[in-house]
Length: 223
Image (cartoon, rainbow, N blue to C red):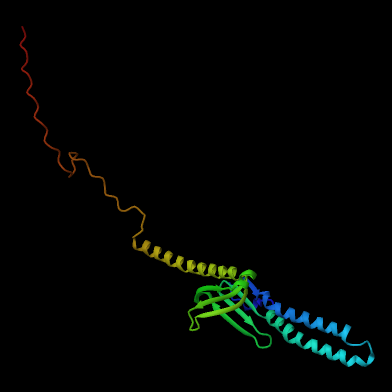
């Protein structure tokens, strides 16, 4: 089932939209193969090719169709109707065929994301994704998530992006406030006027007294 784009808010976009892992369909496929194989074997080998055995053919067909509907068709439809969607604002989970159930987790309420895998799930790349939120039900489990490690990384990337976007405006406003108060003002301050040189008729510091001149020698007499 495709994601309904009309559910997106303004400025919201989809990061991934996925169904559960295909491993949940292994048992339904096996039931289908066994039921069809038994039905074919009864038609070919067990029921005679006579017109009086038509009721047996119908009975075998009904007996084969019942497990196929219950244990093959129903699980397949449930798998197709269950989706997990991550946007830049929230984590969306939808499931149910006739009675739909939806769950939205805002990204700003997510505290941590973890996953759990057994040995078979590690081989298949599936797992259970645990989303820890600030609500009373602090741990939300999403079962049979395909590419669970990749999904955890994508959610963590969104958490980091929202943390950085929340810190940058605060730091920018703090720098603007400090600039307004003059703490980080890089403009040059008032320049002191140049001090006038002493002795030039100004009110500067007076020059030190000059040393006395040596006496001049007496003039020579003419012969």
